[in-house]
Amino acid sequence: MRVGIVGAGVLGLAAAKVLREQGHEVVIFEGKSDVGGQVVTFDVAGEPLECFYHHIFTNDTDCIRYIEDMGLGPKLKWIESKVGILRKGRIFPFVTPMDLVKYTAIPFTSRVRLGLAALWLRRQHNWKKYEGVTARAWMERAVGKKAFDALWGPLLRGKFANEADNVGMTWLWGKVYLRFASRKGAAGTKEQLGYLEGSFRQYIDELARRLTADGVAIHLDTPVEEVVSEDGSVRGIRAMGQVHPFDAVLMTTPNIITRKIAPGLPAAYAEKMDRVRYQWATCLVLALDRPLSHIYWLNIADPLPFVACVEHTNFMPKERYGGNHIVYLSNYVPPDHPVLTMDVEQVFASYLDGLKAINPDFDASWVRQKWLFKDPGGQPVITTNYSEQIPDMRTGVDGLYLANTTQIYPEDRGQAYSLRLGERVARIMLEDAATIERTRAGAVGLA
Ligand SMILES: Cc1cc2nc3c(=O)[nH]c(=O)nc-3n(C[C@H](O)[C@H](O)[C@H](O)COP(=O)(O)OP(=O)(O)OC[C@H]3O[C@@H](n4cnc5c(N)ncnc54)[C@H](O)[C@@H]3O)c2cc1C
Image (tube, rainbow, N blue to C red; front, side):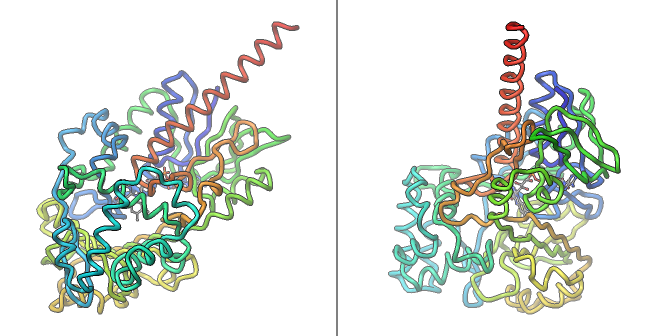
C-alpha cells in the first residue's frame, strides 16, 4: 500500500517506521523546515534546546525505547528533580511528603488532607470512576477549598487557564497516579527526570535519517493544503498545488488544523473533533547571566502573569549553553488571549514583575537573549467524560486516519504516548489493509 502521512512529529515518524517495516511505501509531508513537531528546538550558543521545555519520567518507556534503539541510551541522563511551588511570595520545595508537611502557606489540617488525597489517588487503578466529576469538585470535597486554592487550583489554571473548572478528575488522577508510579522506592519519595544530553531532537533526527535511508520520503517545507477524498474514500494529498495519490492517509495534525485541510470528513466525526478545545502553549525563554532560583520546575501558585518557571540549567549544566542560565516562562492560554498578539519584548515587559516575585533582585540587565515560542495545539482540554469525546482513529472515510494528542487519555500528552499512538494507528492501518486484501482475494476466488 502507498501511505501518505501529514506531519513529521514523533507520532508521524513512529507510524512511518511501523508501516515501512511491513514493506509499505510511505511519504511524509511536513509543513515546517524540520522534523520533530512540538519537540522542535532552537540553538543557544551552538547547543540545540527545546523551544518548549521537555523532560521524561522513568515510566515513559516508549520514549526510552526509541532513544535506546537510536543508539542514544548513554546520553539519556536521569537527574533528581528539583520541583518547587511559589506561594505568598515564597518558594517551597515540593517533591517529598516531608515537603508537603513544610508547605506552611496553608494550615496544617489542609496539608494533611492534601497528603491523604494524593496517597489515595496513587492507589486507585481505575480511572473510569473519576470520569463524571470535575477535578475541582472532587478535590474541593477531598481536601477543602483552602487547600485546593493553594495547590491544585493554581496548577489546574496553569495548564488550562479559563478552562480549569471544566477539567475532568481523570486528568488529575493521571497526573498523581503516573507521577507517583514513576518514582523509585516504596515510599515514592525520590523522583528522577530524564533528559537527552544535547536535546531530544537527536533521537528524532536519527529516526528520520533511518527512515529516509530505508526509502521513506520526507518532504519538508511542504504544508498539506488538502486531504482529497471522494465517494467516502481517501484519494490522496494536495501539497504545493500537486495531488499525490495514496491508498491510505494518516493525519497527525491537531484537530484545528485537520478540520481545515480535510473537508471530506463525515459531519458527525467533524462535530466530535470540534468539541475538543485546545489551549495554546506559549514559552518565553530567557538566557540569563546568573541563576533566577535554585529550582528546576517552579509551579506558580500566586497570581503572576505566567504559570510555571522552568529553569533548565538547574537540570542540565549551564556550560552546555555557553554559560547561560536558561529559564522558560510558560503559559497555556485560550486562542483569544492578548499574550498571543504580543512580540517577545512586550511579553517580557509584562512578565517583569513576575520575575521579581521569584527573585526580588532580578534585573532586566541579567538577560542576555530572549525568545518567544507559541503552539496552537499546546494542550487539549480534557473535560469530564472525555473518553466519549475522543475521535476514533478511523475517520469514517475509507483509508483516512487521524492520530493526535487529543486521543491520549487518561494520561496527559507526552512524547512517549505520541510514539505509542503512532505505532497503534499504524497497526490499525495494517489490519484494515489486510482485511481489504483478504476481501479482494475472496472476490477474485468467487469470480
Ligand atoms: C509546551 C509543551 C511542553 C511539553 N513538554 C513535554 C515534556 O516535558 N515531555 C514530553 O514527553 N512531552 C512533552 N510535550 C508533549 C510532546 O511534545 C507531544 O506529545 C508530541 O511532541 C506530539 O507529537 P505529535 O507528532 O503528535 O504532534 P506534533 O508534534 O504537533 O506534530 C504534528 C506535525 O504536523 C505538522 N503540520 C501541521 N500542519 C501541517 C500541514 N498542513 N501540512 C504538513 N504538516 C503539518 C506540524 O508542523 C508538526 O510537525 C510538551 C508539549 C508542549 C506543547
